[in-house]
View 1 (cartoon, rainbow, N blue to C red):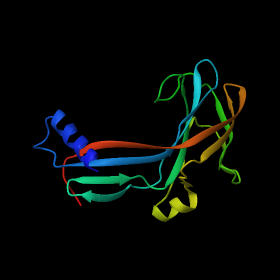
View 2 (spheres, one colour):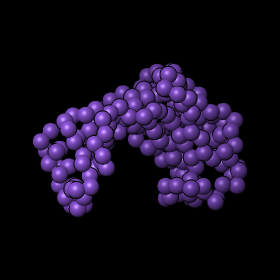
View 3 (tube, helix red, strand yellow):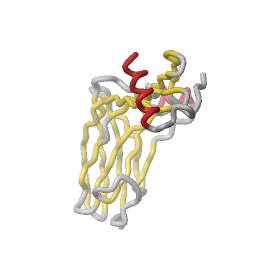
Length: 179
C-alpha cells in the first residue's frame, strides 16, 4: 500500500497538480483479451469485452480509492479497416452475420447474434439485475471462446478465436476525494 501511495504522490507532483488533486484511484479492469482476425487484405474482425455495469468503489485509506470493474462483462464485435482501432471500414460493400456465439471454458455455446447485416454489434445489458442473467462472468485464468460465421463482400468466413482472461491496473489522480 505504501508503494501505491508513493506512486500516487509521484504522479501528482510530475503533473504539477498537488494543490488541485486531493486523491488517487487505482482502477482494476478485468476483461477477456481482444481477439482480432484478418478477413481479407483490407478488413479485420475485432471482438472485445467491456464491463456490464459500473465499477465497485472501495476507500482503502483517506485519499486513495480502489475501483474494480463489474464481475460481469458484455461482448462486442466490429469489422474494421485493417490496422485501425476505430471507425467503419470503407471496404465493406456487403456483410451478413450468420451467427456469433461464445462459450466460457467447457460450458455450452450460447448464440448471441443471428442473421444481421451490420458490421458492428454490442451486447446490451439492461440494468443491474440483467447483467447476471445476460452478462458473461469474469473468471480469472479462464478462456472465452468465440465463433463467427459471416459473409463479407461475397466471401464466407467461419472463424474461431480464444480470448484469455486478463486484469489491468492503472493509477490515476482524482479531482476530488469523494466517498
